[in-house]
Image (cartoon, rainbow, N blue to C red; front, side):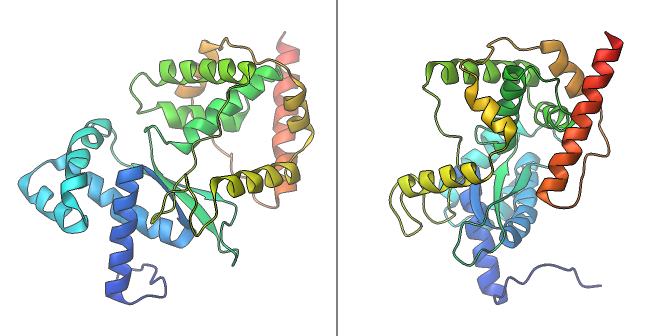
Length: 276
C-alpha cells in the first residue's frame, strides 16, 4: 500500500529539495514560519532526522549527512546539543502551531519549532498565561494547566525553569522593559531586518493591529493592571504538571471557544468558593 503524503503541487525532486531546506532551517533556527501543509510535511522529516541524531552511529550520521545541504554546519548541533536534549524523550521533538496567515493569499500558516528549546513558542505562551492569570487573581485554567504539563514533562528541572521564567517576565513587565515574544523566522530569510516579506517595524504594526482586533474584556483588564506579582504558586505548577486533563478540545468559532472557556472558569470559581 502506498504511503499518503502531501505533494505540495511540486515534482518529487522539487518537493524533496523544499523539505530538506525547511528541515535545515529548523535545525539552525529552531523555529520557522511557513504554510501549514509544508510545516506538517517538514515535521515528519525533522522527527526522523532527530531520531538519527539520538542513535549516534556511523550509519545514522551518513543518512543525516544526505539530508543537510551544509552538513558541516549542522551535524555537530544535531549529534551534540539536540541529541542530549531529547535523550529521555521518546518522541514528539517538534511542534506545529497555527498562526494568522502571513501571506497575501491568506494561505493557512503555521510555526514549526523544536520543543524544550530556547524558541519553544508554547513555553513562552504558557509563561505569559500564568503571569496574566496571577495578575488577574484567577485560578489556573484547564488549558493553562495542560500546557504546563506539556512544557515541563521532559524538560530538565521543568518546574524550576518555568517558575524562573514567570518571575523574569513579571520583573521585565513591571519595569517596562519587556521585549516582543520570540518570533519564528522565514525558512529562507530572517525577519530581523528588511527583506521581501517586510521589515520588522511593519511586522510589529501588523501584530499591534491584530491584537486590537482580538482584544476582549480580559485583555483590557490585563492592560489596566500596573504590576504583575513576581511570586509563583509552585504547588499549583507541580499539580498542573503531574495531572492529566481530558476533553479540552472545543470546536466551533472563536466566540464559541471563548464561551466554553468562560463556562469552565465559572465552574472552577464556584468549586473553589464552595470548598472554602
